[in-house]
Image (cartoon, rainbow, N blue to C red; front, top):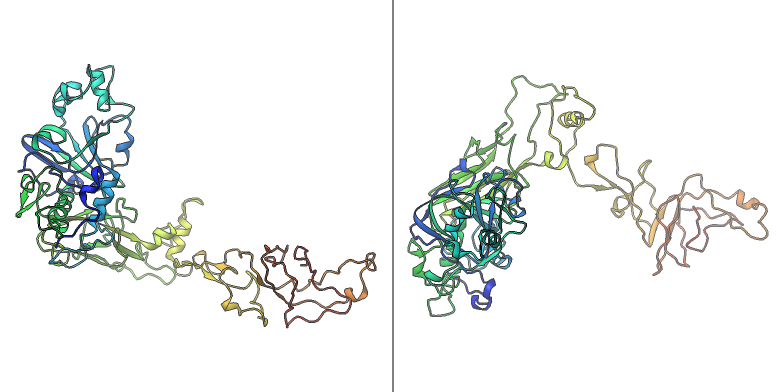
Length: 568
């Protein structure tokens, strides 16, 4: 069932997320990607074909080799490497930010890859469960000359680019000519605004007369590669099914259609208009917690990650039909010789976890596309699955055989060795609170103070990941009511007066020790800090001594009334 967009598409103008056909040849079909191509999709044009604006965005042209332009610097293939070969011309189309954000919000209508197939598409968008598409790129054939004459045919010849000579024309598209007559990148790239829609002869064309094999790429907002066929499937599903015809009107008005273009002008697949035809295929990209390359011990050594019960060597896992992808972790294989108690077997992934990005929760197993595609119109799909060992991710160290000696003092072998030994290893855990001093037994509670086990967590903190017997330094925040435990040898300081200016009184010298003091004050004035015995106290005139503190001897002074005086 379709939904009604609010505000209407017509009110958004240039920022509307309208979608147009990708190519002038309706027979173009995006084939299944080869995992060895690292999400690069080769498209073979049998005849001269124009590349139209798929949505509203800007076109830039670059020459690879030498210094990498900033617009291309962050782009990566599925292995994390830069995707383009040197000495090629790359046409990069980037969506306008408003269009990108609105299309990504509509992608929230796509059910999660872990959900069962749905008969009807959702009518409310949730948090998007697919990557946020930002740009598309086409790499021109390797035989294209890096000269002005080599690039003119893709822009309709010399008259298609403004300028009076080659230098001006190349500057208009963000390129320059070096001393040898070859094309190089100019200081500023071209950002040519292109929009979908219009009659066939009037549509905004990105590149003209493409023929033969070209490389097609799609990238998300962080520059990671996406399957271009999956992007075509998502947008086609939004165009014809999820958003589709406005149910609030009786007219046939597909809401995401580009202006001045009919649904019949789009390529047709399964009886529905699509942006480009695509083959059915679902791909899972296995990555680490930062969406980077996944390595040992999960793949490429250790084989702790299993796909459908078997180890995998590829980070791109593909499935078709109604099959699913079951990801699990293999148990640590038993050692050939039983280990000793003080030298257990090294576990290279003691806390292995996985999650479907970007919204999934980390767990010990994941099943993708149970029962097949999440909807009958989403036969081409793409998701990323993050795989991580929590201990190594949080602590930063992998375990090492405790019998092996350290190669050097700075190699980090000693802490890695300690993590493999039960007596010296600690599991990562959040900090816990301790309300007594770092050293010594807990204090005896008084009538005005809570018990040590219920005092606020900011008294002092200890983190179990620091090791047994070690605690973090005690915090000293300012608070209106605090418990004090002066040093056992501390005696109240006598208050100077005219009669005792020369020597302390005998009573003050014989005053008993104060074993515990407590104050409860309330005021709006900022608290003052007392040196040497913890946080300061608030300014007030009411003082209530702790009931467990003995009364001071006659003539002895207790605490000064001024909150700024030091009494500890």
